[in-house]
Length: 153
Image 1 (cartoon, rainbow, N blue to C red):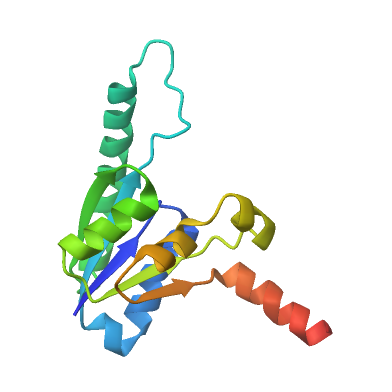
Image 2: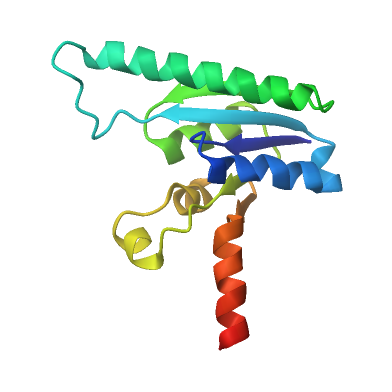
């Protein structure tokens, strides 16, 4: 089994790795991280071209992904990664299809329904576009707020 985990390298997005590791069924699979450089809406500095800025972002992402890879290798887990450029949900789905993954596990930042309705979250877009099963992981702080809400309701 191959598992694709999209990441923006935030703590919330990395919770998907922890979810996979804690799930005995998913843990047995090959884990592939995908980071997408999204240059839309980024205005490069006066002295830096968009291509140079994209290179800087990719280099930093690669450094962080190698660090994540090393951390989990020390725990006995092999994690591969790939870096793409473009619209995140499109690139995540393309990567999943190209790598012939069996499952996508993505974290949701839990920013709220109103923002999602107008902008759309990457997790929701991936779910809508993907021909491959997708599991959306809610971050712990969101789970805690929801649990507290239901206790007080």
